Image 1 (cartoon, rainbow, N blue to C red):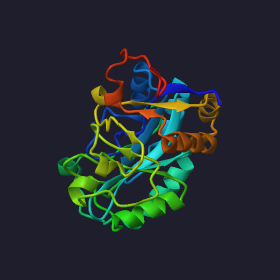
Image 2: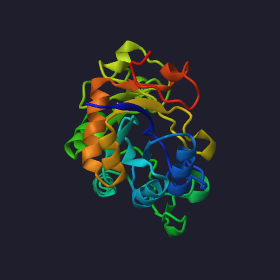
Image 3: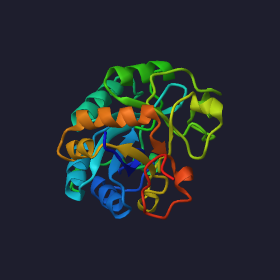
Image 4: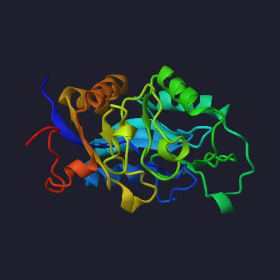
Length: 266
């Protein structure tokens, strides 16, 4: 199969996340990603996917393949990326998670604004519930629910000293993972035999693309992703991750800036 290495970044936030900058509209995110040479881009707001429809249009305009997701927070406060091939699938899973989201008192002045926008940055809604809370779902249950809904499941920043499997659980449990995400080359105990990807976890514009990774993909799958074939693209992405055909940011450090290199190339 003919493949090539492309830049991908599956972990980014928009203005829906209470901890993200109000500048982080889906359109700005997609535009900044294109400027940085990223071809596959994920939107993963905290416990919600309400900006995924705008993200789909923003990525179409920029010629980027979108991946629609959520960064879900388990009962133990472990963050998990749940990645889907369509905005509809991500929205459906977000609706499912709402039933497990505690309705805590929410003060935007203290906790941050949560803004649903369209692709032209028009405000559509201001949810009155806090999306940053821990769900009433344990880590194992959350991962199984996401996988059962068709998501690629990626434990987030496994080596981070907060909101990670290492900080909250002390280890990486077995699970239906496509890969694990890390900030740096992690200890083997946190890999679990899975491929390791890096992610920018961008909350502000200047962080978009800061920890992109390379993944080897079939150009036909990329074309399908750009033309709305999200399910086909997600399957190809999942296969590449499970195969380990990736170069995280630290492995790319020796390559020329802005020059993707196929995983495994000399």
